[in-house]
Amino acid sequence: MIRTKIVLKILPYVAGALFAGMWAAAYEVSSELSGMENAGLNQYHDPVDVKVFWFQSKACMILPPDNYQSNCTPLSGVGMITILTILLMAVIIAYMILRRKSEPTRSHTGTRRY
Image (cartoon, rainbow, N blue to C red; front, side, top):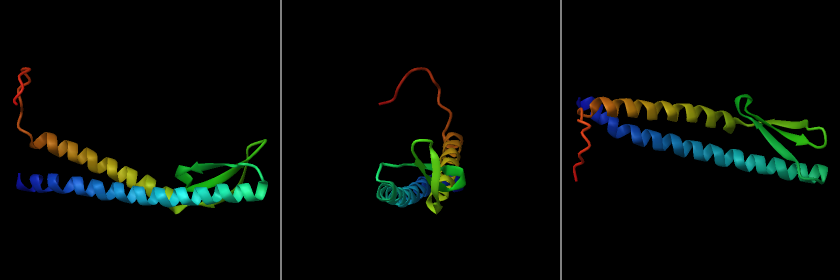
């Protein structure tokens, strides 16, 4: 029981650290994608779409008019975001399960305590 209480106190901090890591990786990916868009504008003199392939950890410029993929660049931050998201979901699910098991059973009679 004491171990469960300790884990219940630690898991929110772990989730916060994972979320902060996701934010940092997303910030890095965002700046790299912005650089790709600027490079596309400089090279092709038209706005260029950038498509991110999450499970391949890469981003490609999509050139008009036939949606040709060009200048594909591997982005390590994309893979990190995916991994951190999965870990965050695991921590949240573990927290929910432990919290449900540690709570005493409540009667659901409709009365509330204030």
